[in-house]
Length: 200
Image (tube, rainbow, N blue to C red; front, side, top):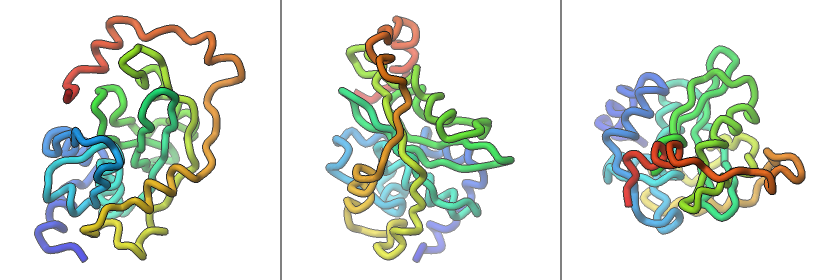
């Protein structure tokens, strides 16, 4: 169960964009490699730090408090880290909230008709330090209500079960066969823009 102070903090995050601003401003980027810690939303709020998956869990919990289902979407890459989004639906369109070390991999307004459109909106901004565009696949939505049995919102334990589930579920390819070989490198301006605010 949430404490009164925790509930006040989450209830103050009334809209998806407020949740994103809170993640950007109040929660430091967790420099540990994803998977060394998988904090619950309670621990993220207390420790004021989160990496990608921890940030998505926090955003999903905040969305749930605000009346949305707690949904995650996993983006799968090559030669790069995967990325996890908390997704939401407004006016029959999809949007996303995310914590990232790259400026272009965060918030998306709810303007996307399909989850494929939403996932593709990250494509040009999803690159590694070798300037390769690395996004390849996306998952189906995962409703975190399935993990209520382990108390995912307030657990003091590492949430390995969620990370393992995201790895196991089917993912859908974003690129047609042969397209990967034709991809260009990220140009200087997009590369520099993506690294704005990056935590080394």
